[in-house]
Length: 257
Image (cartoon, rainbow, N blue to C red; front, side, top):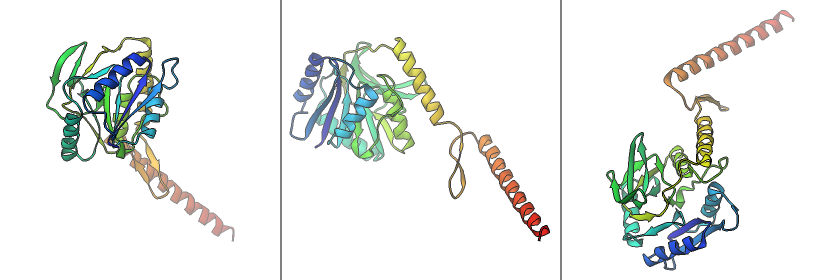
């Protein structure tokens, strides 16, 4: 199996139109499968849980996670094959590819048509990015990555899986694969801002400066150079105190003989 196409479905008409556009562009052979989570009657699974479920079920070498309102335009199976083969040669450690994302503060990469822009190409593609837009994400299944268990909802999961990939040593790219996304998104809803706050809290805690104590040695895993220096002094002071306590214990034992 080469491609698994996974979608959260709240509107069957939209989903059938999406699937038809994929099949018309070559995703219809025996090496493609379609997976979906049925949220038509109620939200059985949110994005984090639902997409993790489909990643676990997928058999394809590549798992396409896309919105029900994306449509193939000109590019199709052959072009995506070429893009991913080229990306593999360029960076064998890639794990994620999409059509829109953030490179750094104020810098973006796009290859998309949506209500905001038509046939847009921004950046030199493929462009390595720190985040991907959720409308279309290709996951290399062999990377074995997924979405956070402790986040919920339908926002920021593209950024979430990019952070997971980065921590595990993988990379994410926007590639030159043009398709249409029908929705303009809703970045001003109460749900959006609540999800943004939850996302920020989770990752601020996950990436907090700290020292880890292994059974062999204390190890700094994050933080500034100053923090690491202060941590080193703290470790050395603790060791000196332990040595002093051990010496006092030995002397006390000797005087009581």
